[in-house]
Amino acid sequence: MSAVDAVTLHGQGTLGAPTLASTAETYNQALAPVGARLSATLTPSGNSTTAELTVSGMLPNRSYAAHAHTNVCGQTGAAAGPHYQNRIDPAATPQKPSADSQYANPHNEVWLDVRTDGTGSGTARTTVPFVFGDRGPGSIVVHEGMDTETAPGKAGQAGSRIACVTLAPQGQRSAVHPSS
Ligand SMILES: [Cu+2]
Image (tube, rainbow, N blue to C red; front, side, top):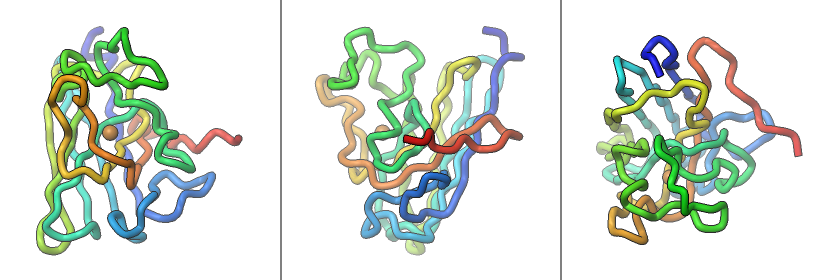
């Protein structure tokens, strides 16, 4: 894929209870308070992409695991689907998401584990060696876990999903939830 095909993805919003039209939601108001803000931008440069996640209004002095997932946010945390992978683990299934560290690692996925300061704000940044073209992630999901597992068989796991922000190509309207 040439760099000219690479897209910038962006999402931001204020957390609220999930609705059909919302693009930033909390699934756990104790850990991801209503009114907290998430903002994420994934910017291509050459053959790599730099991703940045900024949070505010979250719990102070806490780490949160966060990743790019394949689908837009939905009514439940599960709606976001599995982690986005550049090279897709051929052994992964909807029932058994990839936990193979050959695929579930921060160079083949986008991991944005973020640490908050005393006011509940924080920024995480990572650069991955791939770009998004006709395929890209639909959301950034924040997890209950404070970091992301790397051990084989558990790689990529980070506990339950507590918040989500939908991504869209920059300059376009955010996708809304499919009606169901
Ligand atoms: Cu995740």
